[in-house]
Length: 339
Image (cartoon, rainbow, N blue to C red; front, side):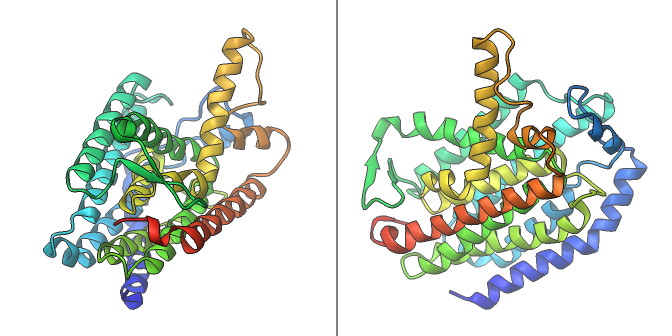
């Protein structure tokens, strides 16, 4: 494993993101690409109205440049895992870009309808999983963390993995509700898979490419955080959050360890489940709410916790999930993961 190349990917993406950030921010302001605040949200969020959105472009472009430049060697060798991940994340980001554009030009918080967004994401996810399966990059059994066992799913693999992937892409999107939140919790997630790639590099040549992928995610997000931390000067929008959702899912499947989404992605899991529970409880009780507001970060916010405190808490939880994920692979997984 070429650790120097990983550091280059991280530093280069960080530097490129900082380099283009002022230009992107100025362009967004000129085009009045600003955030419209949801009427039913916390009242104090109304002060964020007018903040430029679609800022995910700031880190998307540098990540794509670094991935395709430093990861070209893998494609030459005939390993297309990283290429599939890049295309998948980009398509998710493009869906987010369309969604943001509808919000901006129609001057309302709702972009694509739930049905439209769901259909588009499911198609992209199905194409990604189908391509990975066709190339034998994923199996019809899954690694169970902390257990020396691969659970055979056979024909049920896609029945389970398609909705699981959709849930996590969407949950990353839901997590983007406070300044710096999804940015901060995604860094430990990407760090976990960088470490896992280093641990598994003797088992597969593809680990170098995916380590570059995750390192670039870290570099881009750390640079974006300078603009996105409270009080945010720019929001990533669905452009950035759906792009990151694609990255999150792609990292897990590129290592053929989708169930690590449940551990490394513990914050996304909590956020997504809180929305499902809120909607389900609301319907079952004909109007009662389980949480003050969902996703759960808004429940905590409406309970009096500051945005910064919530972000720090969620980041610590994400870091713990990342450590547990690495531990699962280090102590139990090496002989049971086939790359």
